[in-house]
Length: 413
Image (cartoon, rainbow, N blue to C red):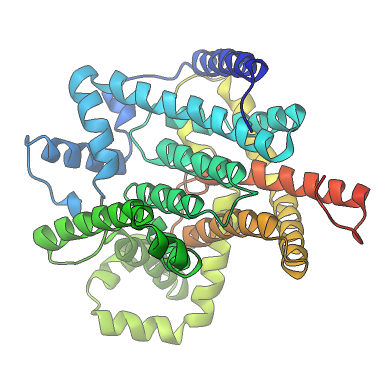
C-alpha cells in the first residue's frame, strides 16, 4: 500500500502534534537536561563508561554486562554535544516511534481514527517522555519494537516472503545488542526462519546476506565478552540480575531478614548452594516471580520524580492509577488476542496468525522476563507500550470485522 499525498500531509500533522505534546509535557514537568539527571541511574553511568571505552578514553569492566550497541549509539552524540546529543537521539526515537505505531495500525486497519487512538495510548504514558532525559535503553528499545510492529503490519499479507523473516531477524538482533533479554527471541527467530524460508534461501543465496550479517554481529558481541571476561555470551546481566535481585529477594523473605543481610549471605554461597536453595524453595520462588511480574506491570512512574515540580503529583497519580487499573483489561485483551490466534490457526489464516503470534509472544516474554527484578517502578515494563496498543486495537478491529462478515465465510474484504 503506497502512502498518498494525503498521508504525507497527515504525517506532517502527526509530527506537529507530537512535537507540541512532547514540548508541553517537558515544559510543564520542567524536566532537567543535565549530567546529574542524564546519568542519574547506575545503569546509565555504566553505559557512559562503555561508550568512553569504545572511544579509547578509559577501560571498564561493564562490557561484561552492557552490550555495545547502545553505548556505540550515544558515544558520538555525547562526545559532540554532551547530554544534549543523547537527549536529541532519544527524543528523535520517541518521535519516530509515534510515526511507526501510527502507520503500523493504519497499514493493518486502514482506519485513521484507530491509528490516532494507538498514538494517544502511547503518548498517554508520559514516563516514556521522561526517559528521554536519561541515558537508558528504554527509548531505543521502544523504537525497535515500534519498527517491529510496523514490519508486521507492512508484511501482514505477505508473511511467506523471506524478506519479512529477514527484517524481523535484523530488528531482533539490534534489540538483542541493546537489551540482552532479546537473545532468546532472536535465536528462536533464526531457527524459525531456517525452517520456513529454507527453500527461498537455497533458491537465492542473496537472501542469506541479512541473516549471516545478523549472526556475525551477534558473534562479534559474544567474542568481545569472551576475550575480555572469559564468557562466550552476549551479556552476563541476566545471571547478575537473578542473583542480586530475585534470588536475594527470596532469601530475604524466606529467612525473614533484611535485604542487605540477605545479599551478604548470597555473596558467600557457592553456585551449588544457590541451586540447592532454589530447588528446596522452588514453589515459593515461583510465587515470588509471579508477584514481581504483577508489581512491575503496576509500577509507579519513578522517573517522573527527577524533577522538583510539585504539580507533577497530579499527573503522577493519574498515570499510576490509570496503568494500575489497566492490568485486568490487559489480561482480558491478551486472552482475546490468543483466542483470535487460535481461531486463525484453526482456519489456517496465516496472514493473521503469524503477526499475532509474534506480537503476543514478545509481549508475554518481555513481561515474563521482568519477574527477575523489582524496585524499578514502571521502567521494566515500559517498552511494551510499543506492542500492546497496536496488538489490542487490531485484535478488536479484526473481531468486529469478522463479526460483520460472519464466521462461516471468513474472508477478508
